[in-house]
Length: 336
Image (cartoon, rainbow, N blue to C red; front, side, top):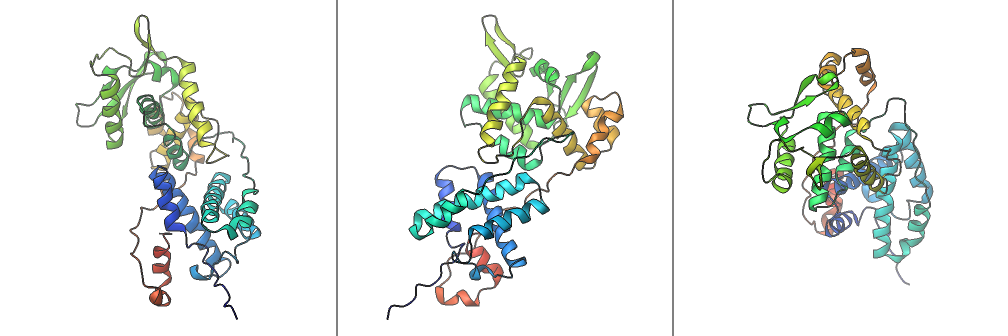
């Protein structure tokens, strides 16, 4: 009599799936997000269903299991997180179905689970996860590098759109111990915004090697080339850039909001509040004359930073599987 075909572990393809994402040149951040999402599904199955990692098989996981998981995520997190978790599972099952045609029915059923829409709150801003997703969208071209730095600059400084357009190369002070941007705000009032973060300086330096080789300090930091030379970038151009990449981010997270410069400014303020700055300090950095304008950031609830990538253990002989701890099994499958 033919032996029954052993049940296949649901997470058996995770390592190969993540490696395939790298082959497809997906960003490390996206790979990490999908890895975290699959691990979140594993933790849900352990906590709610009482299943260890090797007890979760493709036979056990059904469309209903995945639907219940996404509902559970939405109850404990944002709708955006729920959509990202669902995207990861859909992508994983699409890959797994390519490896095993018997998984196609589950993949097709899961593909029909819809992402949920979210609606903007009265005071809306991007959380750290959304900012990172937005920064991943520009291509590694000269224009893409410029666009990425525009997004990064807006989030890292919280400047108003008009302030952003007027910033010149001379306003980026890098020679001091603590680098900063000199911003001219409403009523021609000047304020200093520190940018001591190494990531900012690296992005700024790289951008300048591409767009400011002549180092003319009177040039606008971000400019449009016209018949008279380098002119101020238009408001419409900045808006178009943000909209373009928000639309691209929405392919990964359908709940991704519409992005505009003031949303980036709100996101900067919310991040400062989360980092522990007082409302008075935030008001000074944002150029608010009235601190009541700044009080909206006291409502912020941003996502915590994700844990760092952990090194996966090497291959283990099949006979030793049962002797591995749950933690080692999880690492072996590529979930940590």
